[in-house]
Length: 132
Image 1 (spheres, rainbow, N blue to C red):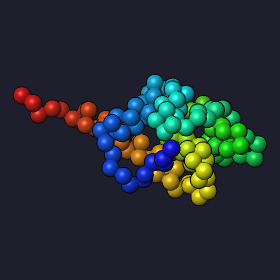
Image 2 (cartoon, one colour):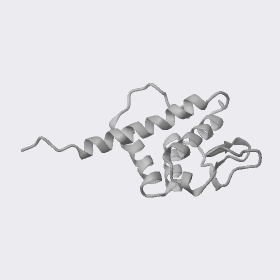
Image 3 (cartoon, rainbow, N blue to C red):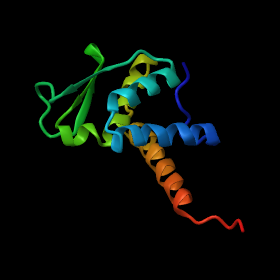
Image 4 (tube, helix red, strand yellow):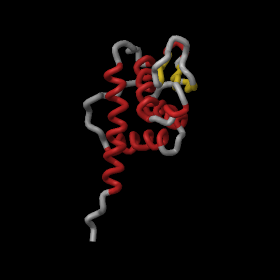
């Protein structure tokens, strides 16, 4: 399993994949299906997804607990927030890849890359075609 490169070239397949993940979470409201696709894509086992935070966590929107391989989401509002789901998935990805320290910046960048790709796709879909 290779971890995603933060500054690599994005292919049209990657763009389509990232847009699909964001849409599954935010529009279709199917975060479990998005996690299934993410795990299949990165070839890792699927983390559990739970509502509520584990003891000791109070202010987080979500968190990943590696010992039980679970993504915890603070409220239903954030269950459909692609940034939170993708950010916490990155922590799972790093943990199962054996690299689990100092990854907040990378998790942020990973999630933002999905969101940027999704925004660029929706802008190009809204743009009128120049074909006559």
